[in-house]
Length: 182
Image 1 (cartoon, rainbow, N blue to C red):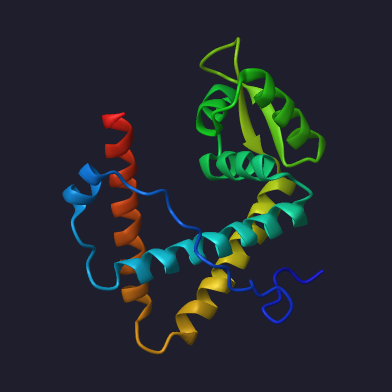
Image 2: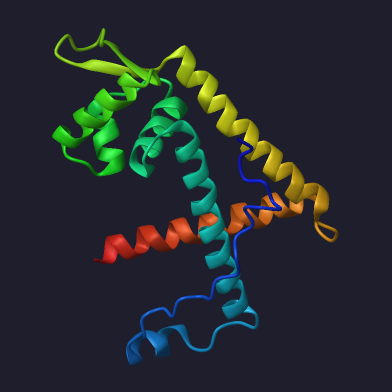
């Protein structure tokens, strides 16, 4: 199975879903958006939709649900983590996390090992098979990024990276500010 063939799996253009209306106070605080802000927001929305489709393809290829895929990639990126940290990251209960870890162990993507720092706890690590599967995911991300960088005619790879890094920082800061105010 070829994953995400651009000719057969291209995402259809989706319309931007209307965001909730803001209060008068919020509109006054934010005043008029900058030129191009609405188009930029729509492009970000399309990027999000495309990325979700890509992650769904990765999860499907691995035979995982979205949540299992997220757990597997978190464990792989961490290299070693605790079930407690995994549960906190995914915002799952300990019971749901235990069931997910069991499932990931059953398909040989992760395993539990004794925690040398706490004999009552275990650590989670990717198995060799899990490392191979994670490497497959990463190589596909790199292939797709290579296609994006080499096919863009006006921005360099560094400019594209800078733009994504910039908007990631803006979104992260806005999210943190929102949750601090709530």
